[in-house]
Amino acid sequence: MFWDAFPVLDQFLSAYFPELDATFGTDAAATAAYREVTEQATLAQTIVELERLAALQPLPVKELARATNRYFASELAAREFLANLRRLLCT
Image (cartoon, rainbow, N blue to C red; front, side):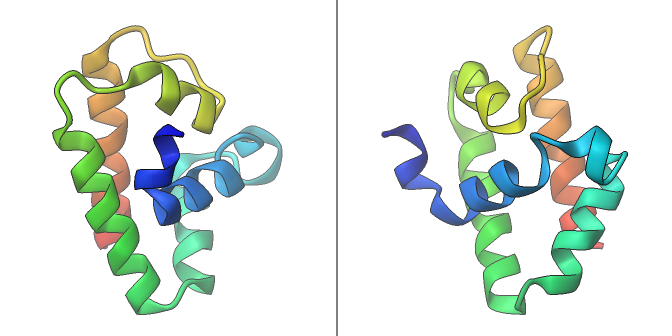
């Protein structure tokens, strides 16, 4: 399975993003909630896996869309989403 290579990132995305609107409202709020309950080592692993995913050419947009329950109009839009998540995870 695709997400087997990104187990920690998959847990983060599938737990915090499918119900984003109802639970958190924004990517920033979801990421802040994750940061509050996540150990530093796990957070670091999440960032490593996110960077590995973002480096893939081409980016697997369909898999990312399924995990996050959102539509990406293009690969660029998906990359922008990942870049924003990285920024939020690192702040």
